[in-house]
Structure formats: C-alpha cells, structure tokens
Length: 186
Figure 1 (cartoon, rainbow, N blue to C red):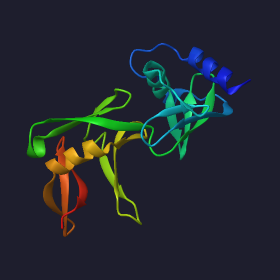
Figure 2: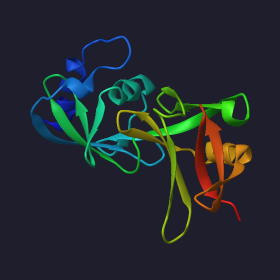
Figure 3: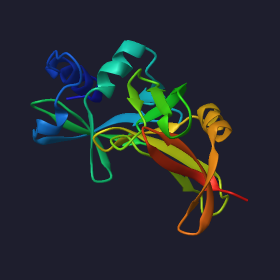
Figure 4: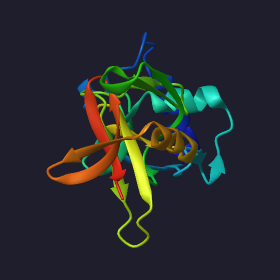
C-alpha cells in the first residue's frame, strides 16, 4: 500500500468522538512509518508537501501519541510512525487572567487545543547548551508538548517576576498557584 493509501485508510479508521479520541487505550499492531513530518514551526508535511487543509491537520492532531521518543498516529486498528522535529504542537496564543500567585495562563495551540498552565500542564524551558537560546514548552496532553512560539514567550517574559529557588535568583511566571522559572535573574 502506498503512503497515500495509508493516510486515507488512517482517516477512515478514526472513530467520531466528542473531544479527543482515547489513543492511550488503543494498542494496534505497528504498521510501519509513513512520510509525515511535523516541523518545528508546527507545519505538518505529507510526502514532503505542507498539509494546507487545517481541518485535516486538526484531525490528525487528535490521534497523535508519543511512546518514548517516538511519535505515532494511532487508530483502534493501526499505528504508524511519523517524524516530529521538536514538539507536535506550537503554543501560538496566551491569555492571562488575574495577577500574582492567582494568575492563570491559558495557552492555545496551532491546532486550537487549549490548556491552562498548572500542575497538570507544567511549563518548562530548555537552554541550548551552545547558544543558550531558550526553548520553552507547555504540556498539552498525555506526554505531548507544545513549543511556545517566540512572541508568546516574549509575553511570558513581560509577566516574569523574581523569585529565589534553592538560593538562586530566577525570573518566572505564576499559573494556578505554581511558579515556573523561565530564566535566571541577572
């Protein structure tokens, strides 16, 4: 079967659910890899071409699962491997409610999922060991993260407040009563 046939079969197998399908409960046989890739900027590619139909990207985004370091599209009867350059989602919007420790940060992803940062959806920032450039993430669902878009990260920096953690000065943000360090305080 061609990659194109695999993608069409995959779409036909997705049960219609209200909300997200329970991909964590599905354990079909692995059927191989398909030529699908999610770029760092959140663009989905199939056979090297960007998928321009937003509803199709949204549909595929509901059946993605991460097992270890590998990503798959999963239906009740089929599991295919895909490539993800960084994170499968990008947080493209930030809404802020309240201030201080009562502040709530709500992120919207490029596929229109929303989460509020907090104990179930923590923020984290990785620093590139060579360039020291930050890569910020928010946990969207299961073990799937969204890379926080640069413009959204700048919004977080504007909201940052100082705090000492284990004797070190940090800048960070509050959401749902949790403090998330985003960088060292100079």
